[in-house]
Length: 162
Image (cartoon, rainbow, N blue to C red; front, side):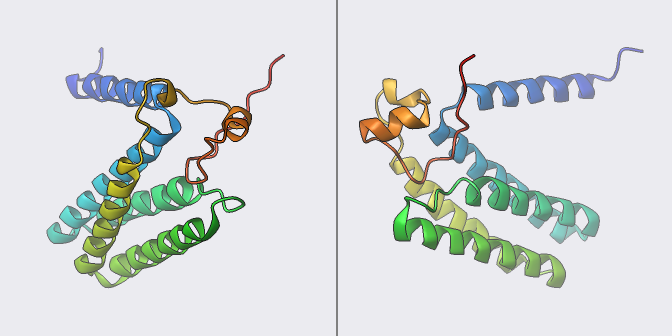
């Protein structure tokens, strides 16, 4: 009549995750994307070992979507220079490796992508904003005028005042 305990727990977890996303600064959002991709890849490996092809495909599709529509799409190629171009090519390579892993049932390709993501995430976490004031998301115009614009930070939509 009122739903299962599991559905209640899932709803609670979803609210917690959504609250974390809303409260996160752009830097933390990228960290969350790395974490989500890693979770999806671990799930894909488990399903691959269990021979569960449909679930393996879903998990790999989720990881590819996070890399493509989250990490790769957040790169600002207009100001990031060579590092952004290298990251863009690396994200494309990762997605291709994951497609091959799914087609050919190759767990080593998933593990390769996991290692690459781990390395990039570690570097990303090293450049985390240190001060409490820099953890709040500032409008893009304020960031560029103050000289604190980060080309690798996700593109944040500009809000218009009425």
